[in-house]
Image 1 (cartoon, rainbow, N blue to C red):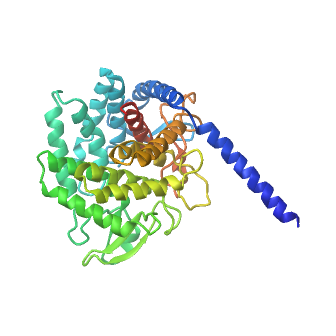
Image 2 (cartoon, rainbow, N blue to C red):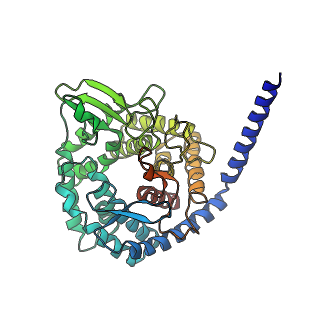
Image 3 (tube, rainbow, N blue to C red):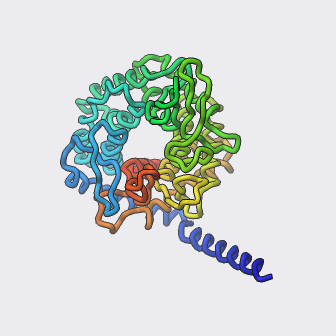
Length: 402
């Protein structure tokens, strides 16, 4: 007879704790504005200091250590474009030429990757670095060179298109190598379509846009479950395109949803709608966003996998969706729905601008803490990640521009 009472008390305690946490993250517009302004100020300071920490402009931060020091990679790493992208965003936020000069310095080292056809992630490298540079410094002497580099990188990325699966495939799957005639598609590739779409409008092959549309339609068909959750990878027979299996690489188990992969999808379909104005892609983006939002804890920072019982927050996933929601809400005609998405973006941003996620006071040059890059590699769990910082800054810019 005591067990139901105990369960009732446990439920009451859980609700109390949830409400307490919610009250800590719910802020007024005036409070959010203050939090965002402080985050911008402290982020600019941290980014200026980061150039002294990193020093070598041919090295790029990827993830942080447990004591908040950046680990560095070469331009060959998929994350290399995010750091110069952060510096370009710092220039956009401050209009201070020193950030522009630093951004150009770290951007130039990525150019050698423009012919790298062994990766599906050229969009991350080039759009974040050269793309932001071309957008923010159109009158700079390097502007035309940036455009040519972007077009070359996009042509390289486009060369990977598979007419069999009608997608841009990925080689980043060790398991596929053990499956005969297997080729994999990843949700991550949705984030690399923006570079390709830009190229199709700016002197590249116009047919690239058609290939991006085919890719996006087929990914939604094959990767999204009936409940709105997503697979990270779908493996196809490379000769006839028949699906061999579906699952996760960075998620918990094959039938769970890896939150950052899902975030890539929310953002990617928002971009697809921006570039095509096809209402199908707006509907896709909203369905995916609704799933993400519905699975968030009270403080709005996603667990690394939505179905995992292992609790590891991923601030990067929420930062990506925060930025996407600020854009997505602007495309929605229903004032009620628009307000709902905008309020969700604001709530996520409020959490990101405060402890324990914003790193102010920790003596670090990273901006956000508690990201999970790759749970199955323990050194990548609960650390700063450069892509979290990038989409956090983008969220601050989009909030400021409302």
